[in-house]
Image 1: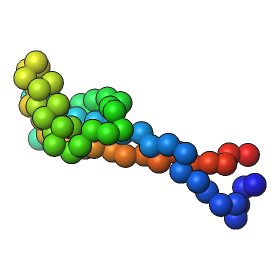
Image 2: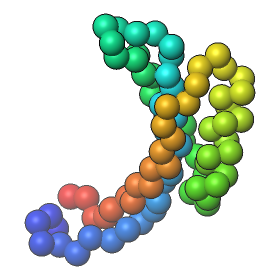
Image 3: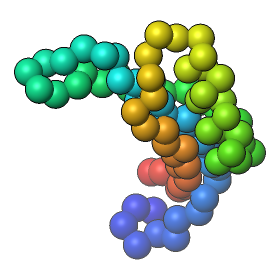
Image 4: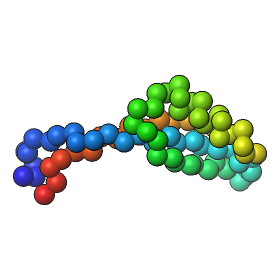
Length: 78
């Protein structure tokens, strides 16, 4: 195995990443906080977007960015 071996996708994982604007300034730059939540691999971009804003409604922060990150799990591992 190893270099040159055929890689196979054996799974997929998704994460919802919300970047919060905390409202605090450090110099002239905003202080941002990143939160990563593992989500169901079947989640759609619209569902992820809606989830981020539902979570935001429970906080005092505003959303700076939203990411839906898809990761593929590869095999074989030696």
